[in-house]
Length: 335
Image (cartoon, helix red, strand yellow):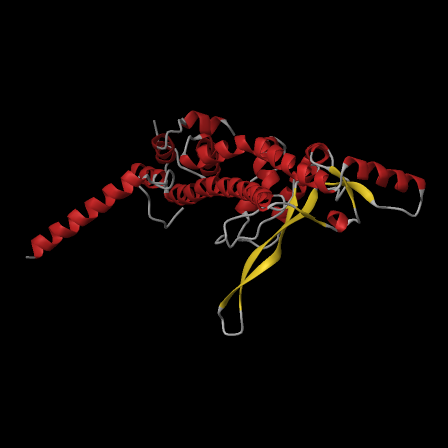
């Protein structure tokens, strides 16, 4: 049987099949994402219980009842409404530097932070993370499967476009994602997931509009508990990004290889070496030049090395011992 030339249509089909396979693959990156995703509802519920405890200690049920009574009685009174975000603070110590750059400890300073329980509320990420974070990163990560099941939606779009300027392609998918999640209506106009989520996490608060215009006192222990909740959300978003980036990195290398291949059987061999079974009949039925041609087995090994990159302490020690032994052997050979 004559070999079949690999055209762009076949390249795209095979690349898409490989990409689907990589997303299904059980890797360290995917397991980390899946594990953290499974913890999110419980984390949010526990943090909300803590926030409600703090708020109700300050604004009691009796206070709320009286505020509603006055607001309902007088047209010019607007003092209470439901809200999902809060400013909490505790009185602690804070380091600062004087004019001579000496460290000075200030006592009895209000340590304050904003805590937003809305689906698109803010999160805390690693301090050395330089990427701008979109408010919807968390929602896209949490409802990834639901979003990607919809036509013209892509829960990974912010990761794919992270280093790029705003553009029509990005806007198309973010707008569709937000519409599906119910986040595009603006504050108090959410629908679907956005409304269900935000109605679950809201309290009657006394004050003016923005976070009811108040900071509520809490203990340092309570404050740190809520800080850990925000950080856990950030870690989940980062896990989503690392998983998707690991796949995108592999796909970049795969597309280079596919572009260099001349024959369909070479591309199919690459897919099979990666553990993704494809036949030429499947590619043909379902609907070049100038670059170095990668050997399919070598390329497959190169791509496999791009995932499961976290090493155990034992592996690091073994590698270090092997390195030192190699250095000693090199030194002995020189002598």
